[in-house]
Image (cartoon, rainbow, N blue to C red):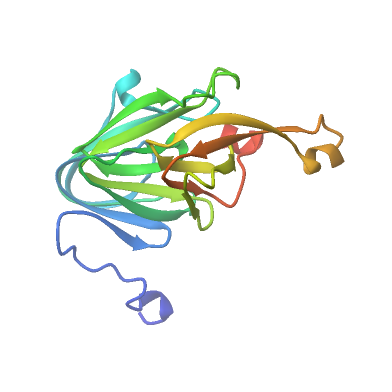
Length: 225
């Protein structure tokens, strides 16, 4: 058979090294040689001798979503082979975490990660007044973290002179050492819609960066995830 579908742009080539790589804008490939973790239901294809095991539903097996406090179930992938991961055709990115780094990320944006990384569910400091607080997962250690994002994310530098305010439904993650607090402001959009005019943003201060996606989480989307 011939055609654009079978061009090198779409044809999968053998992995050259173990670990995580971006296969294309919507998919991450993981050459497994041992163990790795991924969100349940994210595997779209695999080859080789791999086993997929549901990770325990306790705190250690869940990644908290912001605001809702719901969990994102994880699975462990073991063996030797290759697996491809994706989620709703969202854009995929790889973050390399080095010793001493701390990256806090919204559970809904996690696709897969190296077993060498540690993660802990933590309440975002200063967010206790919003529906029980915001929950994020803080990743530490050394390894790669695969993320998904609706659209192309914005990476905004944060400096002591210029704190950054982000919509709590649009934030993907940030440098964990930044100071966080909730900021209430008047929203022109909500006033035009007949709302109270009050909106809440997450304020980040210090030295680092924040990652924001170009869309907001709506109640309908939250129920689908």
